[in-house]
Length: 151
Image (cartoon, rainbow, N blue to C red; front, side):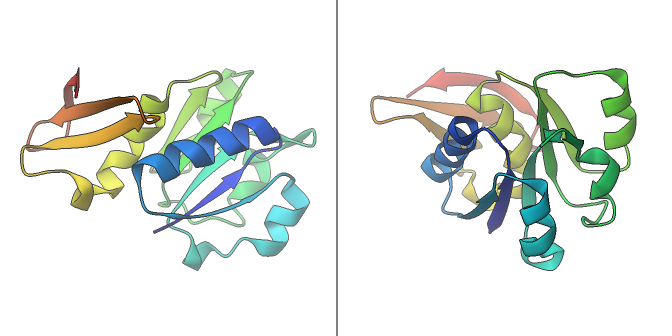
């Protein structure tokens, strides 16, 4: 599975990549500016995206529908949410808007339905917070979040 991160904050981009790679065996592509994104992004090769709404003072949402199919899973992130963002992300059927700062679980709980093969027989998905702390998310058969517990 291939994910793509469009985030102009290098620290945030690195943290997002860490969250994904600690929990899944993925290929991650990323860029820090929208112009590069438009040149290197290939919609048919990417399974999901994590996109900062404002890059280089450009509202990415206003241009994204020309580049990305509407049913692609997208996590939109922003530090400054407003009602216009909600209206614009509604075009993308499989999307969510997260406000910075957010917890690792926020991203993992959205992506879980795209990683059903990683959910154990006991309906848990193991997620980690580094080497010392691990947590399992428990799901009902219909894959809805139910509770979490430390491992």
